[in-house]
Image (cartoon, rainbow over all chains, first blue to last red; front, side):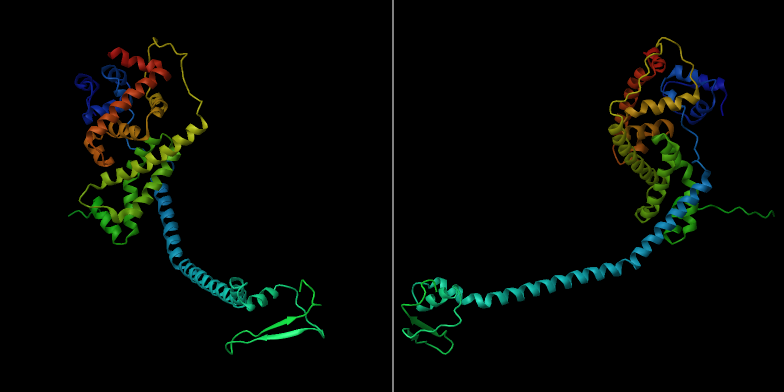
Length: 177
Length: 199
């Protein structure tokens, strides 16, 4: 370290020569003088020396290496153990989604089948006798019917697959049937 | 012939290559070698020993995780300092927003001191004065000020570390000085008198 005399002789505002800064940071006697030359030396006097973390370098290094070891182990375990459950979870989700979609589709198909005659009946309600029959299906079902005055007319069907329509004319038949 | 146990220590770049080759012992050596540098910078930026220690440890963990990205054509210390400043600035930003939320109305203003009274500068006090007045600086301004004034890094080197222009560094330095003088006037009038005497 240079002498106080040399320091005071060479110090100028803004000086940054290493030997001057070293003296500034270690000599209490010259601190006032330096700040008088340039007030910016006030905070400049703090720096310089290298500090040691609390507990020392050995303890610090040990902590860092320990943390690294834990992190490395965690990462390794995450790759080995967690990747399979994750893959399984994804596969299970896909399978569940496909099963759900199939069930819904099946349900829709089942629901569509009895609805079809209704749909056609509503569109041709007034035009065809089938529409009358279709509208009757919404009314209460008569399980037994006995009458001597009724006239039964069977509507001729066009094909073997056509619905068989039977018309009953009876003055005693309840109006809301 | 005198037998010697001295071995030539590998430089930083060689050490990094050894670590990349899978030698954790080399990393331990690198941590030992750089602990003081990293901790000193963290401590001066953050101003608290325990926080500085935690941040320094985080820096070394990030260093380990990103070692593959280091390009050996650049100085290792520049790359290391960049990591330190990034982590420390992030920490300071989070801390500032936490402190602002908690102490938004709290200001420590020391006005009872007679500004005309002379000041006997005590080395022990300077650090706490710096910690008090540097709270007015942004994390980046403080980092640049610390690197330049306390670690004696030239602005060209700081620009490399922070990945910005040298003129930006000089601007930050100028503004940091100005802001701290204003803060000194408010909080420590006895010190601000030093600048008045110069003018």
